[in-house]
Image (cartoon, rainbow, N blue to C red):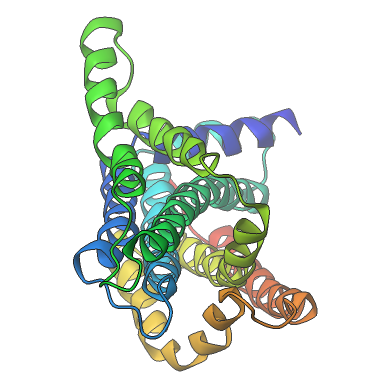
Length: 292
């Protein structure tokens, strides 16, 4: 079990050091922060644009993060032949692949919390901006906008300083600081009901990411990186019509009906079955692969 945990931990750190993971996180944070600020419309409700931007950033950014994370992590192990070192320590191929995918999921979970927390800040800024406007055209409240921008800019400055004078890993430090600063922003005018109302529909998006982690990991265990990425994004494009059942933005609106936790649990159950099928297919393909 200790060896499996070591693989999971190493995968998380590996993705944390990947510049692409940092860029995807920054892009998702920028969407959740600037979409309601630069193209702000009420649509009859001041917080709707902020909620939609946050959920869209989690959906699209999370899928891109998951697919690239799974493919790049597994292909790096195979192409550098470091996988042979792991398999030499009494780790089966199936256990190795499952541990890698679990590590990718935990890295995705950090992305999920980071973007979700920053979206909460944007929603609160829209709420306060509507109150301050008093009948005029409302805007995202300035201090909340600054708090939303902070996780994008401050981590880069601090990480660069720590890299220069304390030899910290720049990318990993920036990714961790983005999460910490985003979470700290939630505590300003802390509103637990707002957090629950936003993260309920956000949780419904998580099973999609889990499925595509398993699918992409399975593809990467047998195909090269470009082919695995192409296959994964073809599946994304062909299944877009199913994403609507996971995109439950209406339940996060103020005054919405009771959160359908049973339906969200059903989504998790259905997608986990598909994820297990993809994982088992990947293990079967991986077992037949020649790694010499």
